Image (tube, rainbow, N blue to C red; front, top):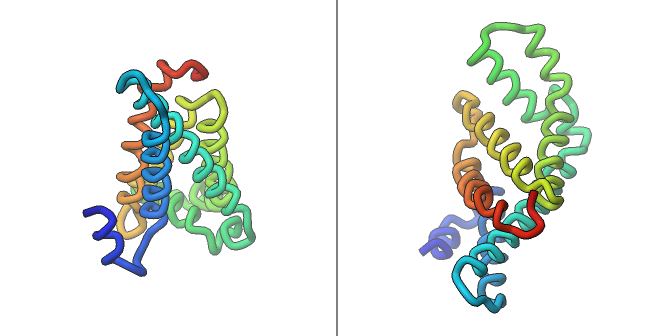
Length: 172
């Protein structure tokens, strides 16, 4: 059903759809090719693969934002998100909003790259927590600018990885 639904929506695909497809295919491939003695070891192997795929996707999403369009406050979607959050939850603080707008593009690029780096390195829990915080912030952005669907697809995958990191031999 999932594949058929995605196919019928062509060409209207979103980044979250692509991310989910890549992640799910990688996990399925890992599960199909990993010999295992019990379900727990298979689940840990699939979770480890999922974290690596998410790490690569977040890292390159952050690096992709290092361009003149995203880093320019007048053109960046990050400026819209930051300003909307300030006006919605803090109030009409134009000075704060202007200060955040100046750093919005850079901070988002750095945060997404950091999520990817942390998920790929030995600090998977920190990467998952930072990723969840990013998606909560995006989800709290008032309509019409929030993108709850993207967080709704990514956060469960990060939560799935969080408790199992303690059982992974190379996790901290």
